[in-house]
Image (cartoon, rainbow, N blue to C red; front, side, top):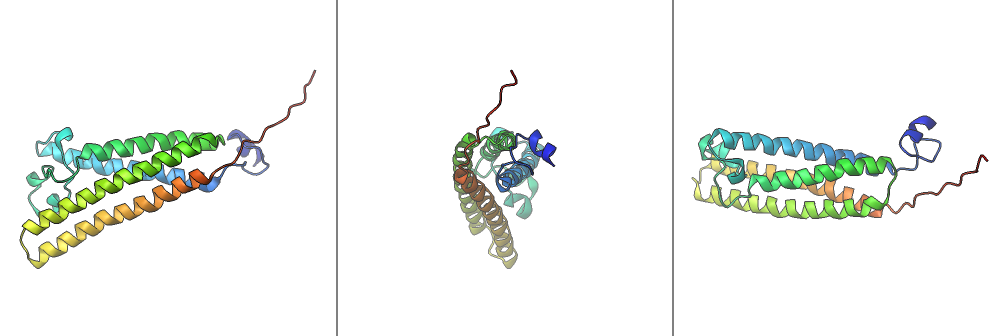
Length: 193
């Protein structure tokens, strides 16, 4: 066990002085970011199939459920897919870098990581609520049948579920990161000469 801790820059006898809860949340932020990049990457592929370039594609996933597929990716009230992809790419890159710094027990990076994750959450919140407004606008102009009402609710709840997940994960990871004030323990070495 001591060898495992020493491999990752630890000082203690069992697994080191790392804040393992912070490392685990960092892993979950990485997994969340990869999963969301796969979701938005799939949506970009759908947009490409209907003839919309990824730079011009809007995230209007509700249109693929309620209308024919060629109606998607074109709602200018929605958020561009590239904004989501960029935000999750930044968070993913920073999280991977942060994972290795956490494993090396480098607390100086924690404040930067916490601030960037908080800002990413804020930006994703704005994007999600703009998307929610576009979704509600779309369904308000569509038919008023009970089926359309249920579809609107399902899509809105899906979007808000993703937002609740992001909120919990990103804000707790940022909070833990900002609370991490572990100084690096200095070592004293005895000269062999």
